[in-house]
Length: 163
Image 1: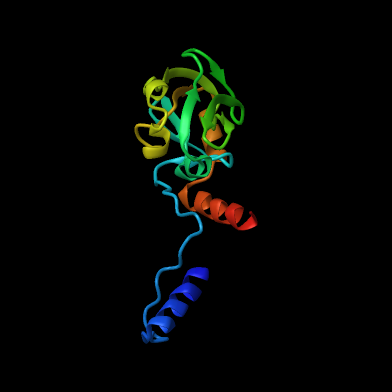
Image 2: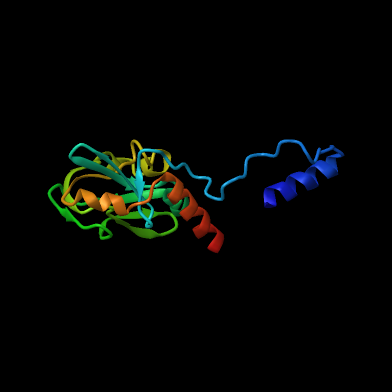
């Protein structure tokens, strides 16, 4: 809405005509971050991609955007147990230190060692190079309690509107 008001004001100031029946821009989401299909999302802003017997886990683009520049990531050891909703990592950014919670319970089978030398991968590539851990889920049905892309986008919009 604010964007439409700004666009209208700018058009008026520049003397441009805006037809009222012209196709409008698609409604803009307040959650400008990318949300990918094929992933599940937790309300604490982690994502999970379940492939075969392993689940890949990281933080969402929305989360990294709110954190700001990530300067350090502390990950668990391979073999550590994680619980759905429980903290498994810490992320330090220029703004704050935050816990990262696991969207699924299970055993950590791999960690992204690249984050030790390049923690900024969480910012530049949260869904690819910035993944954090791989988990062997102990209860795959927990995935059903997570949000799909549309629900997560709506959740982000509502959360941002409340702040």
